[in-house]
Image 1: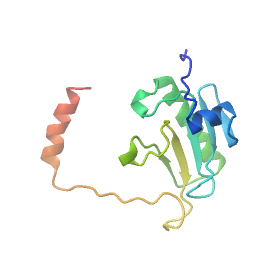
Image 2: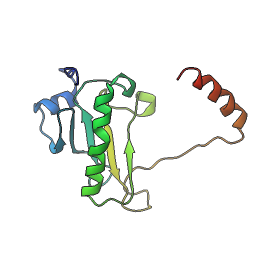
Image 3: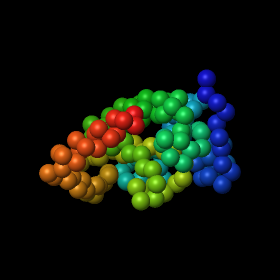
Length: 142
């Protein structure tokens, strides 16, 4: 059973959950609230917000995380999406704008950069030895 959800009076997403700010609600559960983004990257861009106020993913209780992906799946399925991104950012330099964990469902209607999420992927090469060393370090912490 989930602990009582934390809320922050100044948080825009907490205000949306409480009904203090209107939204285009899609799906609501005991743990999550989803709605259409009013600044969409493409038609159907939706947000899913856990009702517990946590700034970053690692601060959010697991039961809230478990509730989010089935909602994302339902939103993508209802729109008949074949290509889309599920996005979640943590911290300003990682492009988090609102300090409340949230997930984006961003439809990608075509291959152009005109709609949907547009990203670069600056993959590093020739780093297998570094990856191997970090793998061992990380395993010791998991």
